[in-house]
Length: 116
Length: 112
Image 1 (cartoon, rainbow over the protein chains, first blue to last red):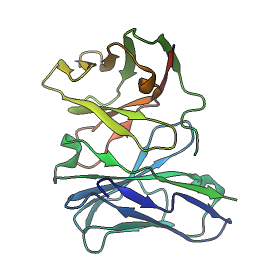
Image 2 (image 1 turned 30 degrees about the vertical axis):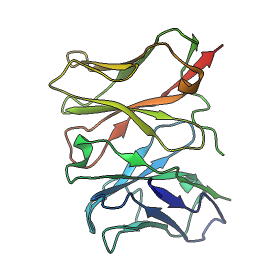
Image 3 (image 1 turned 135 degrees about the vertical axis):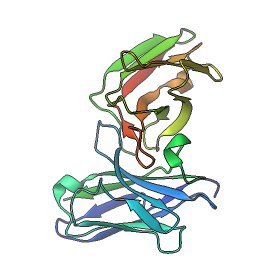
Image 4 (image 1 turned 120 degrees about the vertical axis):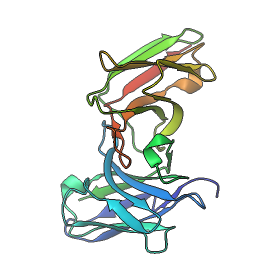
């Protein structure tokens, strides 16, 4: 497809389970971002990749959160031992260049994670 | 899908009127600002951006105004249409090259 694709669209997990969320950015886009959006709030930055390099992970809430982009295209956000406060929409975004916040981001529709 | 912005500030406008959505940003180091539109169940969609060396930028039916003195950003939508109904977020880059900080959002409701 032409846009950023995320899967699954919805994920329900029991507390304590591990989950993996996938992002397929727009082909050729260098920069990739993960954001977390709680209900009724704006997206909050989690982490940023430039190609396969994770240049900023300052927004990851805890060491239970891990992201990777091993070949510089598809990215996976993994959350270990999920907790109820992890329930949110996880958004992936990509942009063409390296200096990414000086150009617009293209967002996917997100994965809605519900932890019971 | 989920509902975005259940308790957000809401602006109601009649179809055909102009809309003005305001945003106060916090970081004086920010030099790049963006407005995004988010419909229920979808990711944010780029509307318009502006750099700090500009005060005003126009797009198709939209204008962004930047007042750096008071750290204020506004989005003007001309001849508002039902399809403009959504939650609108401003975002700033905080002078960084890696992250955007989003505001809390405003829900725009267009009445017929």
